[in-house]
Image (cartoon, rainbow, N blue to C red; front, side, top):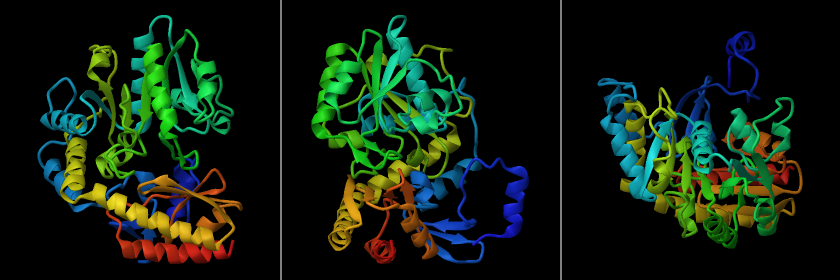
Length: 392
């Protein structure tokens, strides 16, 4: 699975801030990865949702191979046609907005926070998030993240952030003050355990923010780009945000992030107010355009809907079989299985049988296969998971 000399390199030269599984990946394709010793693993959590089209999707590979022979990086004081084209694709597939490009979800949220502060300046600056949310690892994003365990030891955090219980109208109303400028929410909390925002709550949020002249921000870093069966998760709810943040699957494996704003507020971010040196490079934008092309031409939204329904059905079958499964929840190909026992033991067993899934919030299995996943791959995964839960 891995070589001791690689582990030694990491121990000697790489900061140990990650918990690493005993797997060294040397090749990946679709829903499969190969280890150093040539063993195949079925990946149902590809790249922590980065490889949304599966690993090394042919259209993405072709696009970046072609682009790397032309120009890799163009500074943002020059025009870059691919950046304009990708911004147009994002806008046409979401709402009629404008786009700022960066390199990650945390950077996209940081850009949103700065725009929010400018929008509310000078009196309004507070941003309300949800408990158990996750918005990134920078200091401001950590402050916005509603998980106290991630705040330990790094205070004082930037001020102006507070969190309220998810799906709780009254708690939000009580939290808003004359200093509130925005509300940020993941419509499906990923790290928070695949918890889905209630439809009525989201409708309430939109109406309430309109009434209070508060910006509504959807963090779609994990839910965007087809994951829920729509191009963006908010399209399942029939309303639009003022700001949307993207990353992960947007580049098909290549680092890229984006903040998308309604045009009426985009002008707040004036020249010189914000920047990203690497943001929106021709290389990354070529990958992003290929992702949109693949989703459209290969009808991957439909596949996400159909395979998501099939996967959910198989998981519900397991739930009827095993009392250890408390709940199956999610949307499209973003599904959480909450257990009444610790989920890490189940995930570890799956790993031993060459199935890669994730455990979050101690008792939730996070299952997010590629949009290209096939029925037989789901069947293979469910066979392993069946045995894993039986042993739990």
